[in-house]
Every structure is written in structure tokens, then in C-alpha cells.
Amino acid sequence: MRMDGSNDGGVRPTIGLHLDGTGAWPDLALREAKIVTDFELAVLPRGTAQGRPSVVLRVNLDDGQVVIVQTSLRLLTQALAAVHARYGDDD
Image (cartoon, rainbow, N blue to C red):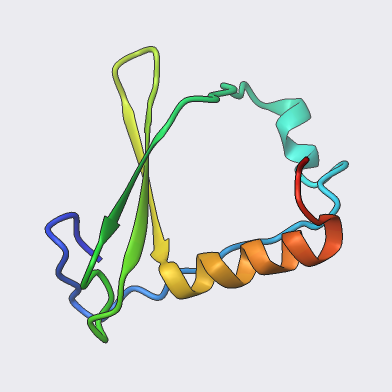
């Protein structure tokens, strides 16, 4: 997937879903990690190889670097449905 909304067909997004994130990434104890709470979200209407929507998250780091995470709307919706089924609404 590319930021222009096109897809060369060679990328299949995945999401590693941890419904209980306690201890999910033990390697972070050995690394420097940045906690970022502000990000931008964009939708590419035809971002997948099949012409379906994809979702892009942009994280701007303090050092000027930018991290882009892209997945299909379908995959993100399924992951969020699993979270919602487990925990319900955040009211």
C-alpha cells in the first residue's frame, strides 16, 4: 500500500492483537521506547490491492521522524470488534 492510495499487491497487513496487553512486549524492558498519545488518522478509499479502504496512522516523533502504520479497514474493524466484545464501551 502506498500513501497515494495505490497498492502494488505485494503487501498484506497484519495486526498482532493482545486482548490482555499486560506483559505483551517483554522486549521493551531492554529497549528505549517512546510513548506517543497524539497521532493522525487518514483513510485511503482505495488503499488495498482489491480497491477497498485502508487506514493510515501517522505518528510524529519529537526528533522529527515520522512513523506510518497502514492496514486495511476490514482488518482494523475486526480487531476493534474483538476488543469491544471483550471490554465493551469505554463509558
